[in-house]
Each structure stands twice: as structure tokens, then as C-alpha cells.
Image 1 (cartoon, helix red, strand yellow):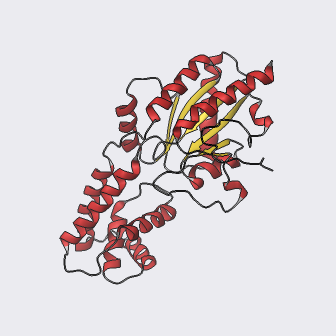
Image 2: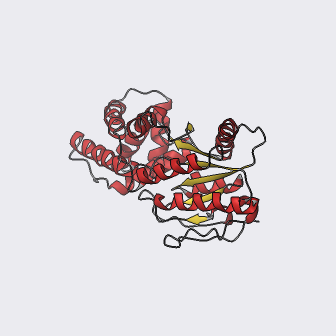
Image 3: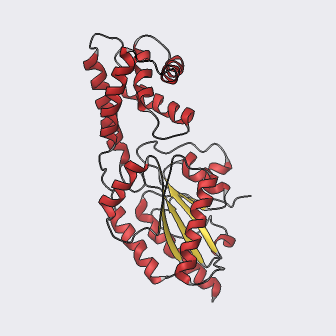
Length: 300
């Protein structure tokens, strides 16, 4: 049974809602999401999506009805669920939009698009979808800016790492295409030693979190020189499904930072309930500092 949970306290970093057993550790492994937690992927994606709709209208301006961005985003979420990937073959998305414009329902359009690509047809619509999908992908690969306060907050976490040497590691755990995410990390962090582990996966799950935990534990053991380090995993992200639920299922402390992409999501079960809901990443260093200090008190 998970402990009682606490939402944002407007900067109060008390650790109510996180049970004492999970504060009794020798080290913390922070598994931090990238997209819409550290950097503003949502703005980049929305600009690319709007551009995609413009290209469709330009290719066939007489076709009705005109599509809304909300329809595109709903189709995108459907295809993510069906393919199990954040960055699937975007020709499928464009083909499905073309089919909706010809009168199909969203469900029919997705089924038709997936079938056409499986059969490798080279129709005019497939050729058009290929051209638009290539430009869409280029738009998605623009470097997004860091979200407000992220740079300063990461600097604070790096200082905490120095203060608690061998007891705190940072893992960047991000979903998506590695060829998109690595340039973002390189652009914003370069050669700075911010993250001890960089792990990029197609889809987060309990298994990917356990793997991130294992890699983080090795980093802790290397820093501390102790092969029996007791550690606590902390998962930080903007998605209930991708971050909070698998984090809860592996026994992590979960910190939820609602972002612009999905907003504040509805909690439907206890396993989806975060330990803390934060107003922004700027709250993370204070909470992590409190968790480290709390353990010092338990040891003394």
C-alpha cells in the first residue's frame, strides 16, 4: 500500500507523503525526463504540426473539411498507443489525415493508413505523405529551449552532488528517437558533467526504469567506492502514464510536473498517484536536498 500523498505546497519542501522507509537510504538515483520536463518539446511539436496542416492544405486546397490541430494531436496519440513508439513512421499520420479529409472516421483512417504502408503501395497519396512526413520530421528535430528555471535548478543539483559525493546521481531518462534527443543534450549541456547516465528509450516501462536504476546504482557505487550502496530511485516527469505509473510500480518516489503537452492529467487509480505534484522543476533541488538531509538525521 502506497503512503498518503501530498500535492504542491507552494515551495514548502517538507517530505510529508513520502514514507520513512524510502528516506532511509545511502544514496538517491534521480531519473529525470527530458521532453516537456527539462526542455520545451511541446512548442516545437505544435509548430511542426501546424506546418504539416498547412502543407496538406497547400497540396489540395479544395479538399474538405479542413483539419484542426486537435484532430491531428488525437491521431498522433492514437498512433503512439498503437505502435508503442513516440516517434513512429510519420507517413502513417499524414496518410490518416488524408483519409479523414476524404470522409473516413479517425479509426477507419488509422486502420487504412497502417494497411497501406504495410502493403508498400506507391500511390499518389503515399508519395505525398512521404514528402510531408519528411518535412514534418525536420521540424520536430529543431532544438527546443530549456524550460524556465531548469538550468539554474540543474546547477543546484550538481552542487548537491558535490556536497553529497557518492550519494546522488542524475540519470536523464527520455523517450523518443536518439538522433533527436542526443543533439538537444549536446546543445544545452555540451561537455558539462550534469548527468551521470544518459538513457534514451522508445517507450518507458517498469523494465526501462529498472535498467536506469541499475545503471544509476553502478554510478553510485563507482562514486562511493562501496559495492553495497543502499539507494532510492526518484522518478521526475510530466506524464502520468510514462513517468509516474511505472515509477510507482517499481517503488520509486515519484514527482509529477504537469506540462503544456498534457496539462494536469486525471488520476484514475492509486498506482497513478504521484508522491508529489510540483508547480515546476525549480522545486526539485529543494526536495532532493531535504531528502538527503533527512537521511543524514536518520543516520545520526
